[in-house]
Length: 473
Image 1: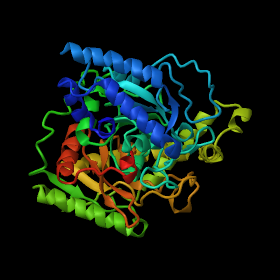
Image 2 (image 1 turned 180 degrees about the horizontal axis):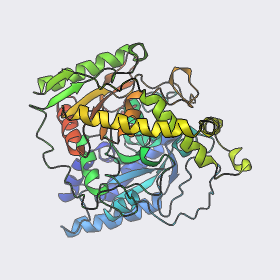
Image 3 (image 1 turned 60 degrees about the vertical axis):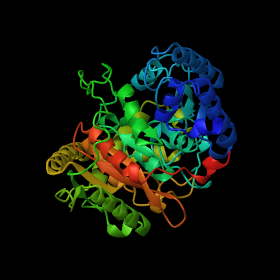
Image 4 (image 1 turned 45 degrees about the vertical axis):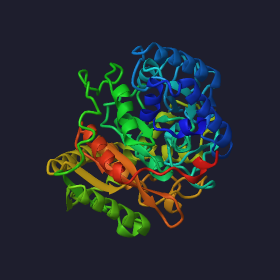
């Protein structure tokens, strides 16, 4: 039973809580057993606190036994939080040797606060590269995290620790952050569902080094679980100045309506990605996934936005590199010596960009956002590949032999950090080596619930598979 509880979707787990057929204590023990079994191979956690988790589980168990006294619909569900998110009583090291291991760690970011208020069981903090600077997960501080589908491959990043843990039941829910794809890249590479919400729908604080490029969202094994999480974490917090103070949307309302009659654009290249850069297996799997939407009654149109010669990759790089340069200004030369050489190099690029290049990128971002707003006015949804490739070897900073300083190998994800739109990824097949492929589902501003609804419709006919490792206990 414990193994089943560990891999059970949260929405099914809480049904067992309600009927007294399982308890938060049993579910937490199941998750901890999987951590003991798999974390040595995957290296997904930067901090574990089993004693606190068990205390939280016992408190939740008492609430469920009282009936009607639970704190939320995910009360008692084991969860993990990325290292980048401040969590009271647990270290937030940003994956960096340059941060103080002694804290103080005495405040919750809004997401951590909401999850605590909801009664979830926090197992620990998951690994991230230093300050989330790259789309893979390794650091001088914690080493490399591995992909649960194949040891020796990256789980993606920068939320790779969370996706590796989630895929094999080391937690039933996970939180990641996303500044250029850092939720969607690892969810695509690790074979789970992930949502980058509309910017500020889930409050973000402290201010990220990547400013308004940054988002925070759920990473789960089912779409319904992500919607349940959004009902907890997507609530206003005055610490995020971009949020809507009256945002009280129910992300499960209309969840099962499907996609019949929806007008959906399919863009295999997003209008600017070179076709020879997209793996054939990826292209084929995404095209087959689009056909599923057609069989579900959606009206599919192949169409792409016209960015008028602007390349979102270059625009994102200018924002990202200049932001990194500003971040590293806060560290002494001695501290920078401790940091990932790639991060330092990216900061050097950013420091040499010049005012004109940075301001130009800001204006181009606004133009690209306006173009996407007008494009999405014609459609309910947009479908693209999530990533042009599948997971590559650990300890490489980027695909295609890159050094990570150019984030352009993630073109489909980074575009929607610029535009701030909701974008999700859902597994849509495996490549010839058995590695997961992701389909990206995008909609207009604040239409996060529609993205979840569409993903759920696809999931009902193409359920998300678990990696073989998950069955080895």
